[in-house]
Length: 516
Image (cartoon, rainbow, N blue to C red; front, side):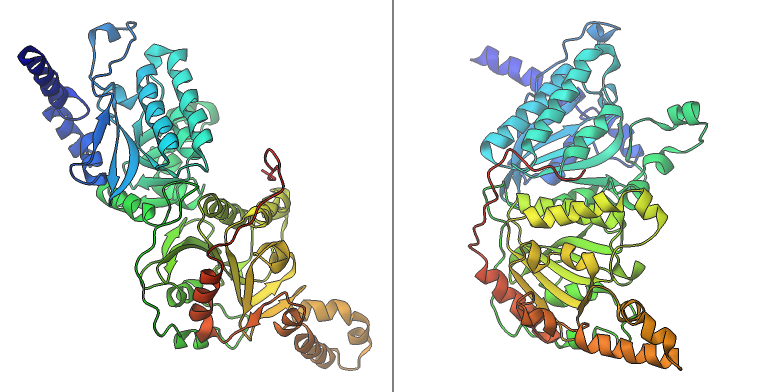
């Protein structure tokens, strides 16, 4: 037994000295770049004393191109399981100081192993990515390793939450695993994602671009929409992962965690003054969210991308909910290509993991123009329509002001399966705005009038009285209740409580064919 103990201690010592950033030189190199080591990242993420490592002594099997002389225990990735705020998670943390974090056959096998364990045991997978891509020396074997991971990512999608944190470069095949996962976080100035790097881009297209411009956190959070969150440093990134996990369940058969909440006075008088008198004047939908959600509970997703729609997690009387709201401050809150994709993705995540949906609607329609039409606003807008239509979680809509045209249907209307629809008294539910509608309906009368401007104004008022109110929709049952703004939080709390045990099933099929 003593002999075995000594051998184990020697290996442990080697592990601590040279494995995954444990060596002083490697640790210093990481810190100089403003980065933590792979183990430091795990130590920050996982509750103290709960992390259990798997595959600590694994080494690569390749003997070509000098790799037979260079071995590292763990082969460039730490894998294992532990708890975050008392809840089980599975995690892998790549180490850029070992072969540039490049993925090998054994590196991939370790990641696949914990992903399989996560699916069998129903717990989230968190990937701390810091890799230059496939290990070139291993050739097709490393490519096969990536494909194995992609396949597991796809099988795990909708079964357990998957979160990817980009903690350094993530290039080539390395970007596709995060792309399949549910949420991507990037660290400003130190993390990059691109299929082909700046040098290749310059060679092929003659474009001169930096890594930051091509695939930095700012680029992917605002332009491409690849990144859902950004963080100023790695510590903040890991804290955001912990916060994000607090809103979601462990798996698709679980319920999202709740926090204790005692119902008291839930009226919010500030909401009565939030809508401007002028229907064309904007307001901030985030202020509505702040009044409706529990204090400081709103956690926005994709905050810098497609800002004409707001999505994020919040709590309502302690319950975790997903919120989708048009943002009148940006493009008047219209739906466009990026907004539709952003909201559809979020709706589908919430539906996967039993998180109820609240829709705050103030939408004048879809954005017109050749750019939108030529880039397929039709199929992209249909993604959001499809996502809401197939969602079986509790779904509640509150129309705050405008609900025009096809966008009214798309934004979780009663007609596509919403459970409860509320509207404020100033809500306008119609095919289109009063002015445009009047110019079409009463075109002949206006053109033949002695005073066309006065006639148009009269017809606009006539149209508003008849159509631009929530009561016509309420008469038909399309709106369940017209409520005063200050009642919103109270009504929504009761609605979601009533829907708590909702059961809905879709027709039996292999899967639908969302208009991708």
